[in-house]
Amino acid sequence: MSGSQTLYRKSGSQGEIQTLNDLVRHEFSNELLSPEEKVDRLLSLIENTDDRFTLCCVLPTRKLVMSLAGLMQQDCIEGSGQDIILSIGSGSGILELLVQRFLKPPSVIVGVETHPINLFLPSECCILTQRLDILDVAKVRTLFACYLRRPGLVVDYLNLFPEVNKIILIGPRTESVFNDESASQVLLEWGTISVANDWDDVLAAWDQVLVVRRKLPKTWSS
Image (cartoon, rainbow, N blue to C red):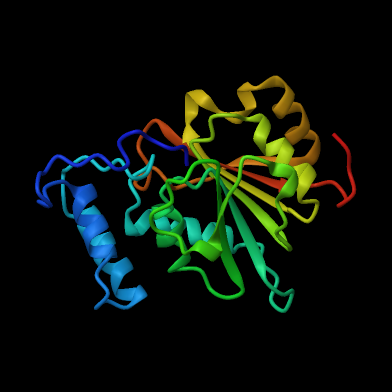
């Protein structure tokens, strides 16, 4: 998820809670709730309001996050150790936090962000860096991105993490990573592309989920 100037914008004054963004942040800071209760409360707030939500590029409803969790774990091999899902440009971390609630061990989401705008992911699950060459994350099996603005980043991450066997991309149909000739060529050589079906009632009409599964050996060059 890309960052947004509206992530921290409040319409209320003197601590008033007026917007959905404010309510979500407020509930997340409630220390009386368990992590599971927080996620359930956040999902209820998001699903039961018409207020604009700008903490994420997609509306993270329960159906969406559960569908994503299922897709992320489709190819997970039991007994293979920790399965890291690396989120490229995790932004506020709200989508990643909600999806993690429905992932089964050993799957863990780790976000990567170039700006200090993480609000929801624990510090151990969010890497703040502007240098990809210093990323040190073991056993990254899945790459995930929501509204990726730089298609070439997928190729950069593939070169960094040779154990990746799946890429999941959410974004506008008109801004597909395959519109970028260079990135498209590498991905078409690396894997098999499919569009996730039965997501019409989960995503906005203009969005889609692309899944790329490895078809080449683990050692490859772009």
